Length: 267
Ligand code: DGL
Image (tube, rainbow, N blue to C red; front, side, top):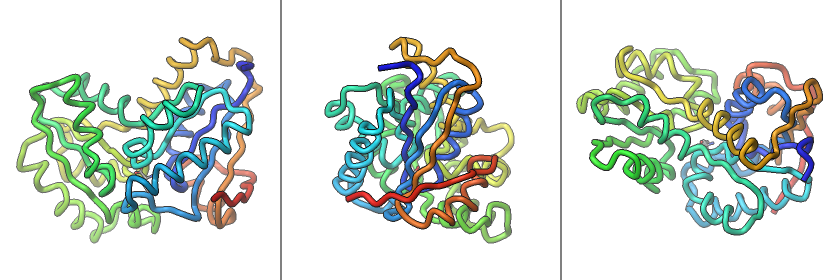
């Protein structure tokens, strides 16, 4: 596979653009095809089987587009589908959970760690398992924060209702005096300020997006798939529904404007 081939990235919707944003920054030579499953978002409350089925469909599609590697930018899809996708598809596949767990081990001093994510991610205990592989004696407090996703999508990232909801959700983490919190959902990096204010400025917030982009770079180099030619990166954005909304709201997650969004129905 040519090193000029794109990397496939997918998420349940627009949230995974926070990962693309970091990939663009850290891996500026790499082309990306992003698939946002806006027709079937949210994945957070759905069953593991359903999320696995959607993830398979998207990976098959992107594989057919000639991608050289894949990034599962969605925490819920990583939790429910990553091991199966790695078995079924013969290309390097990076998820967001292992990189986040590794970052935790570097950040925590007290080994008291908070994990926040969607209901599906927290129920799967995927972060907990990965963190425990590296820090067997860690105290891990996990909390599903289901309302954070709709709040971010509404643009209510720093309003009083959002702060009140955050105080409520994060109270167990504050009570447990965690020194590190994993932002285990694509949307939470946009709430860093509010979350930081509630848990305390001294608490380290782990943004899986940064770590995932770093790990993607490492995996491409290890597999001799990194693109070393500068100024040739191309980006394609595909949404399974409402491409116009993706175009306007996607900018909030990507941090820069999107020129064009293709519409494609799967399943
Ligand atoms: N992308 C999802 C995640 O990171 C959040 C949105 C959803 O529930 O689909 O878990």
